[in-house]
Image (tube, rainbow, N blue to C red; front, side, top):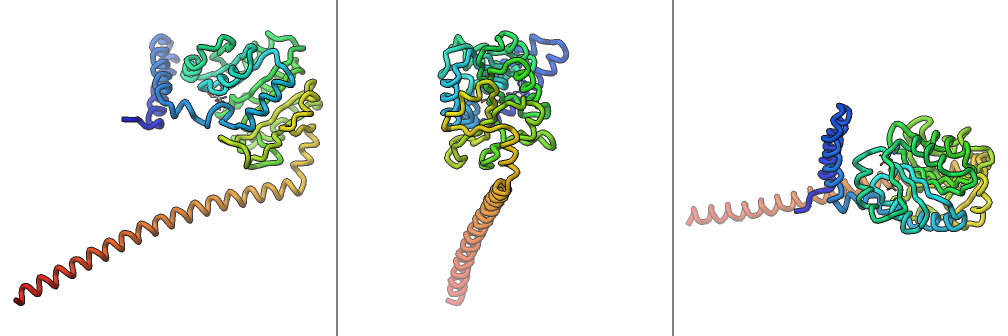
Length: 324
Ligand SMILES: C[S@@+](CC[C@H](N)C(=O)[O-])C[C@H]1O[C@@H](n2cnc3c(N)ncnc32)[C@H](O)[C@@H]1O
């Protein structure tokens, strides 16, 4: 019997929560046992492990961007925040031979990632908060080292992204920084994270955080041609911005130039179009659900009528037999 991935995830979350309580009480051995049980449970479900359609959210367009960018800048190392189950980390290791430093704050996910990534000698996995991890990892590199940094540790109230960016651009101008779940100002078909006022991952979020000289790149591939989860991406570069200029998969400009694009009437119309498309999807969904209900009701009425006819026939044959 196969068990639904949701049930497995719920059970693992329960064990994980219990482990954290033991951790909080200083009972680290018991906590570790429970973290391991939770991780093993999650690892037993292929569906859970294959969430979001694969590496880099299963986005083939994004995978092509990374291959191209890494080829152009030849980074000394890749740094990643938000390892999760290590699916994207594994893909990095399959496409890059240099050191890959990655961090995950949840012990349960880190254990799952460790199991998945154990055969790669070039992966250095940390269980840590991304800010602390980045500070240490950046300190291990010279300011002249080209680095490729993938920031994906945002999915809760506490979003470390601004601090991550400040840490990176303070001393490492040769970094190329890719941010997952970021609004693409020319294509709202790409999804992005919005955690409320001041916490939407869009151009405004970067104001005063990245250097004025930074070039900001977005994918040129239309979202309708992207595969997988179709999440937005933004790539930031300062000193190495010129290296990315020839990349046909990316379109780059400075912050103020992108702001002009975003504030143009065309962008407004684009947003209206997107909202209408979303509304249409909802209405179509509601219409299909109603049609389904009508279809079921029609079947019920037909069954009822057939039964009534059958009863009528039986009653008249009964009456006949009573008269004879
Ligand atoms: C969206 S998932 C990352 C997905 C992963 N990069 C992939 O492609 O499969 C976000 C992960 O970041 C982790 N996370 C959230 N905040 C963090 C923080 N401050 N430091 C480190 N990891 C964090 C979460 O526990 C979660 O596993």
